[in-house]
Image 1 (cartoon, helix red, strand yellow):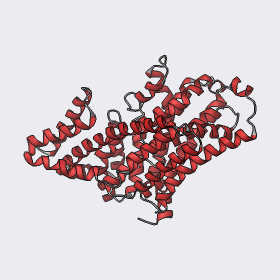
Image 2 (cartoon, one colour):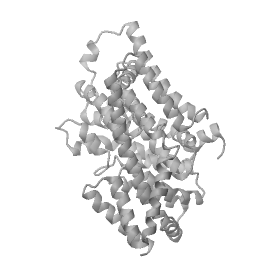
Image 3 (cartoon, helix red, strand yellow):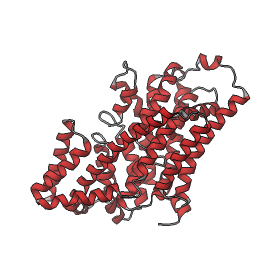
Amino acid sequence: MGIEMLTVVLLLCILVFFALGAQVGLALGGIAMAVGYMTWGDGIFNVIPSTLEATYFSFILLAIPLYIYMGQLLTKSGIGDAMFNFSQMLIGRVRGSLAISVIGVCSMIGAMVGIIGAGIMTSGSIALKPMLERGYNKRLALGVIMAGGGLGILIPPSIPMIMFAASTQNSVGRMFLGAMLPALLTVLLMVLYVVISCMLNPGRAPLDKDIAEQPELKGKEKLRIARDGLFSMVLIVAVLGSIITGIATPTESGAIGVVGAIFLAIIFKRFKADMFLHAGFQTATLVSVAMWIIFGASVFSNFHLLMGVQNMVAGFTEGLDLPPIMIILMFQLIMLLLGFIIDEFIIVLMCAPIFTPIAVSLGYDPIWFGVLMIINILIAVQTPPYGFALFYLKGIAPPDIGMSEIYKSVTPFILLNLTVLILCMVFPEIVTWLPNTVMGES
């Protein structure tokens, strides 16, 4: 069986198994082994121990459970609420201030959790009810939660970025630095959209009576809110800074984050035994699911690579005789389509080892291509009608909100993300300037 036909068979099997509701990691690994056995024989099973060792004993990937645990501790202890209150206090009582706070704080919460689905669910559980209670337009409320919670994979520390770096042998620190300016640009565009849309249509974000009737915060209360918010922000900066400055590896910085989250919960008097246990159990659940997905997707990817898919893609792109940037655009389109049916983990693990070497051979920076991949995935999983993350948003929405309203709520923010993607493609310095300035030319 040629590699072209093998690729078609593999993709068709994936679509069938996903349609039947099969577990993602087991389906990918099982498909690879079954097709591999029929085409290659018993030798295919040697892929399993080598993939197992590379996956579960990777020092970089050990950071994943630590970052997830840090995020769970911060959100379960209520420190996420502290960040929300601090942001709201800084912005003040202006039209749309709550939506602006949601974008900023949900972005940080999404970054703490590091996974799109968990980021949206966590952000929504904190922010959706207050927004609806204060009379915010439903579409605006849902849209900013999707935008903020999903943006966590673009704001370091990001688990998909760690996975990209591990699968392509690139620097995690450079990936984190490369994503910072695109992430800042995205947040800025979202805030501008909220401000301008609320000015043009004040009904989207009315000045809430409850806010107007609230007594002014006392000085002591303001200090407490500022303390809680600032310390939680400092923890995230410390985790990221320890990697960028070379003080700690990504795994060690994850451990710093966990210890720091526990310390903050204690000094803020929010540490409880049941909270600690619940965060641990939730982390174990998320990690076990994530690691099965990583293992299954890695087996699938390694089998496909061994069968020569990289040479096939390289030959195909050369045969098209297109300018290099058109090849990059073609890769973006493929990942966009994949985002309709699978989540960010699998897209990174399937596409990064295949597409990145080709992008590098065309003369492009691997960090630039990696950041483009993350932005593209962010767009893909939120794009109607079948974007993966849309169903997470539906899960936290009130029962009376249908999918059509969710589609309309996320569309403006998807267009903003697409704008950032195009800008980063046209002006690569948006991605490459910061890592080259801080860490030198690669």
